[in-house]
Length: 381
Length: 149
Image 1 (cartoon, rainbow over the protein chains, first blue to last red):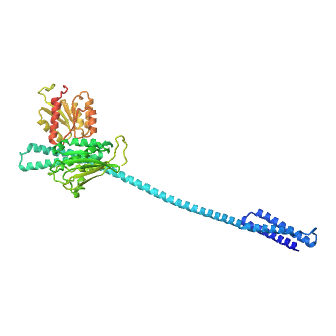
Image 2 (image 1 turned 90 degrees about the horizontal axis):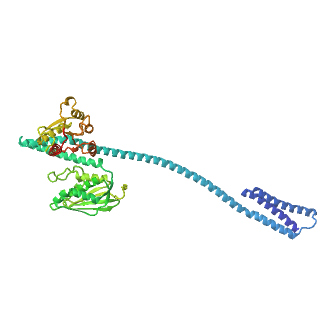
Image 3 (image 1 turned 90 degrees about the vertical axis):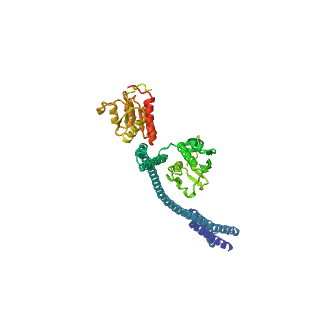
């Protein structure tokens, strides 16, 4: 009786195992494998049922061995347990796969989004680039316009001053001739009138001459090259030798560097500054000191004098063309000197300024690009 | 002192200048000088060549001893006139003094290349102008030996 029960339970357990094996198809999708295993369980269960039927009908040749059937039941239970316990494992795998799939899909969506964003950003960038290119072109056009109008202005000043010289020469020459031939032969008034006419014409000639020189800084200049500032200083000093000796001036200079520029214009720059220092002196012999120091990619030159100085409120005016601080009877000149200096410095890409107090001397500063005597390629300014 | 010039013959000067003011100033300056001279003036390049070749109304004109030539002239420029003078075997030995307002290096080089005998810029100051004209007179008419006619 016990054997019958064990065999029946075995059969049930084996059917249950077959059922669970088939259920695993849903989880893993390995249909054939699970069907085969389920079929194997079913056949084992059928064998048990056939044994039970044979027991009832008494067709069994010999009674079933209790131990054997117990072991068979244990095996069936183990198989059932195995099938049941394997299921969560497959569930895990399935979930992971699903999660993987999902994340893959998510990733694709994200990639698509990013691609879209990138495309938009690119389009935006293209528009910006286009705008920038247009702006740059506009800027280049403005720069070109400015350059042209500057050149035209300089050309205008040059032509005007050049062509005005000719008729003015006639006025000046014939008023001078008039003065020469008829001085004292007409009346006192006539002499005075003629004197004013001669003076006016002569001053006008000087102004035109200076205007011409000023406009020439832009229109008539040499290509830049390395220039030894010591030689420039020596030349400027030599040009002013008689004025220096006459005023007993002490003109000294520290070691000066090599700069990048037009030597003729640089001599004019130094000479104008020295001449200025000699001209605007106090009663004592002038002391003029020139030096240079390194300053962020450029040389900073200074010309220090012991002269009358310039009050702070006038320091901007002195660099303007034909602006003068003194009456013609005090100091001669048209007021071109410093304007010319500033223009020369600016044409070299430098700056010019002054530090001074009234009656305490003045120091003029200007910057010039660095040059290398062995290198004729332009420095970056 | 003056090798090839008989004392009784005045110096003949041709001035090619379109500005009557300059002509007058030159005359004034020459009058102050010591050399007896005849100053002839023409106002443009074509007239200058006609004068030198004694064409048309210039048939009776003398051959000048010295030419004062302005560069900035109507019709034919001073440089063209200079080139023609220096290409003409009859005229090329007449000294040509360029007297101009131009200080341009290019003009100076070009005219010397065309065999100008000297290049002078007109001083803006009257006294200097008179001095320059006198020095032209002094140098070309008393110092140098001019070719015989």
